Image (cartoon, rainbow, N blue to C red):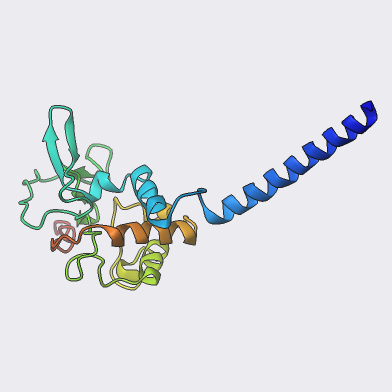
Length: 197
């Protein structure tokens, strides 16, 4: 009796181990189990901090928080940039490497001034006309729309470019599910030419 129960127990443990290994393998291929693609994309944009820069802010006692009426709509087209003192940004230890607006949607550094993109599915001013392939290529190459101008700092496209295709597709599906917001983000401003000597 003991031997038969022991054999049964070993078979049950072995079956559980095999089932667990198969489930783990299937889950790694699909991403997180039970999550739809759009939900996974929302999760990834949240933990990836996309709202930190790509969403205009509402200023509260706790500090700036994303404006939920304009999520991921980029730098507000009607926002006037504050004046920067000459020499505040540079590549030496006695200057700032970069400076940003209070809502983190515009950044100035040695590359010039960059504005966070409108990631909503607005066809004219956002990514509404983009394909999934264009989105993935942009994050893999650091080129706007996958073939255009450089994607400028502080956008960490190199890190996001390391995501799996499945995760990039999930992020794209989530962005496409958002309410389209018409917001024509300004083009980047090149750096000032160095003074002639």
